[in-house]
Length: 217
Image (cartoon, rainbow, N blue to C red; front, side, top):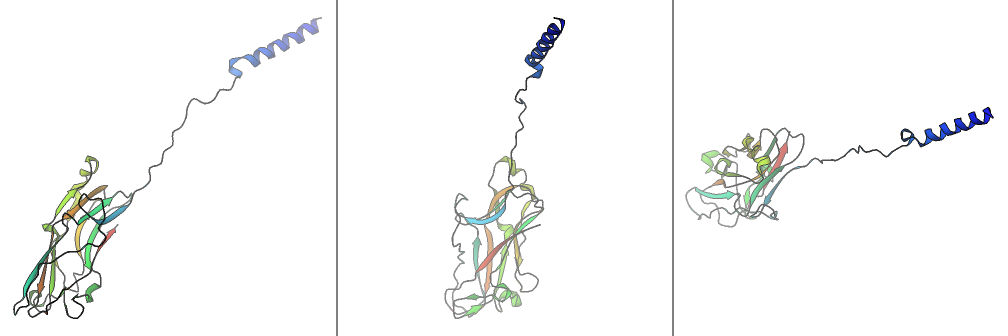
């Protein structure tokens, strides 16, 4: 009888232990949240008014000059209301960036109408011997195209200095740069251009393809 009572007591204790709250396994009530913020990119483009739609084939019209015995100056503007030079920096790990302007064909490129040519980078005779182009980014205007989160970073974004292409030491002109590489978006307009056109340059419609290059460190 005692053995039966002991066995029954042991079974009761085991049953009570099984029913005890400490023996029940609950689902975790401490979730961990995971989120990924993807790195952005550093980009440059020429956009239309509103700074949203890229310009497929941007052009800059220089002022016309007449066939003449004298050297003349033709002027233009890089970046206007319909051709905004935009930079967006949302890349991680960028120390500095720079956008610069150079002739697509390099130092051997020329203004040409298909038959006749004249230079964009010959400083002889103040550019009047063969032709020379001056680019003045400092005449332009920078517009921050973002909210206060990046406007505070605009202090390190600066326009380049005026420069004259000479075919040797000046083959590219800095338009805009950032010495800190912080997150920023904005655009430039109003960069002045001045081309010395040699005397007796044959009449015609001349073109000079140019390329804007974005680089960073």
